[in-house]
Image (cartoon, rainbow, N blue to C red; front, side):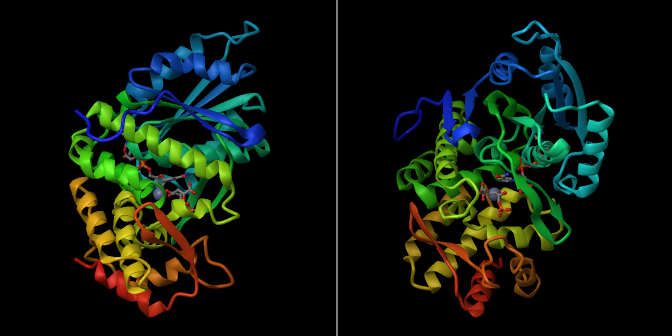
Length: 378
Ligand SMILES: NC(=O)c1ccc[n+]([C@@H]2O[C@H](COP(=O)([O-])OP(=O)(O)OC[C@H]3O[C@@H](n4cnc5c(N)ncnc54)[C@H](O)[C@@H]3O)[C@@H](O)[C@H]2O)c1
Ligand SMILES: O=C(O)C(=O)C[C@@H](O)[C@H](O)[C@H](O)COP(=O)(O)O
Ligand SMILES: [Zn+2]
């Protein structure tokens, strides 16, 4: 039984962006309906280019691909389908994999009525989305997220791209999907560590934007960690609503509003890069990064220590790390200076003032940043 507010109408969230608006459809045991949703959103699709993760190819991507292959468009035409699978893991968000995809798209006679269908976690969504953004200067794409992290965050909002060896997400494009199809039943095969990693981004929404949701998470953390269906659907729907609303206000992170989604990420990306991509998962790094950001906010007297206590308890209840033994300010700082929020050479951080509200701040003494990193060493 869930405690707290009622389950929202979780079946549909709209991302409102003028002629780039799209639907996020959220269901359970709904992959049978994906083909119809895709054809309704992309009626003139001639060709589906399914890009999947090796871990989900057989169980999830092939059934979706074969139902598209059997379908007909509104005008009665068959849809040609090609499928490729990418090796699992963060190291696949690379130029090498992108180049492989471009060659595959060329060989598969991809044209401007082709549609990329990304079926996988954040790695596949970011990589396939960037391939879609760049091939023939941009073709449409659909996100079918298969991890909790991708359902609550990466499949929404149109940030696509790849990593450079020491700079996360450094090359990419804003390229919105045409549709996001979420089926929480797909999470049944997701390993626990990856599921918990997604909870890092869920906690983020509570801190940055929604004190009531944070409170709900405090009351329902164990149901979520145990993957209770209702709790998971509620958290997915609330997270998508939050992200859709922020992205609708500031699509390309120009006004500062969208930067709030980057809470903890200046530290997190440096942790991921210095630890070696894939060793600390993105959501784990975000959890530790939020701890560093909250420590910095306390040192700057921006928030009360109680915020860090509540955040620590919640992250632990979600099974996430709150410290990082190998945290090394001298290794992390050069990576942090390449953060995309840097302005005129100054680092800027998203810092909490209270649960449900954060600020984007610059001109912060390096000594404070070093102290915040050291405060989270195990
Ligand atoms: N574009 C954005 O707005 C945005 C937002 C947040 C994170 N990200 C990016 O997302 C990436 C992390 O995403 P992630 O956590 O989904 O990682 P991921 O894509 O690497 O998936 C995690 C693991 O789960 C496996 N997997 C995926 N779905 C599965 C399923 N249903 N069953 C069994 N195994 C499954 C994958 O093979 C992989 O090993 C990072 O690169 C991060 O930078 C992007
Ligand atoms: O969508 C956004 O905006 C975010 O910042 C969401 C983050 O969770 C995500 O990790 C994003 O990829 C980070 O963006 P970056 O611009 O810092 O690379
Ligand atoms: Zn993130």
